[in-house]
Length: 172
Image (tube, rainbow, N blue to C red; front, top):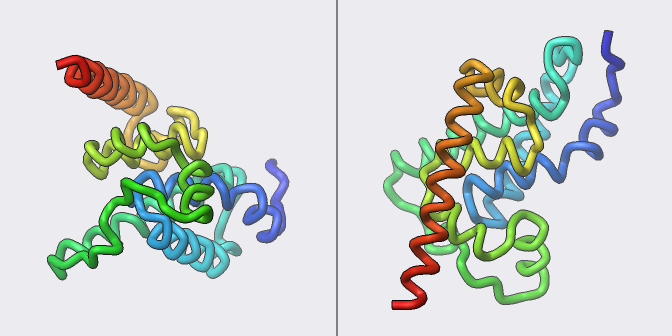
């Protein structure tokens, strides 16, 4: 039987992971901050139903984050309008933005992430930002561990091709 942490402990231990997972999906600092806040509000509201014997806190929080990000994109697509300040950030200008960018991913990784679709960024964020195992990723996505591993392998191959193509274009 896994030990149940206080919500404050869950928050302190997992805030950075959840923020990184969300940021890697939306690629916008303010939106990531807002969505991360929503994740923890929902987690707080449903903490009494969380069972550490079923899933780790980070797996549980990633499932909530996954739902929040999908809801955000669904709302954005139905309104068909995204404010210019909600577009993926490419250049970081002030020190706070630089720190947020460094905290989540470096600039080259941001550029690569911007070329991936939402599902691909979701997979990357769970594996790299939240450090979930393939078994945990499978639980969040509702797929087998083997399927999660194979999707990740294909995604890495795609990213390698993207970086190789970029390097080749630099020489042309």
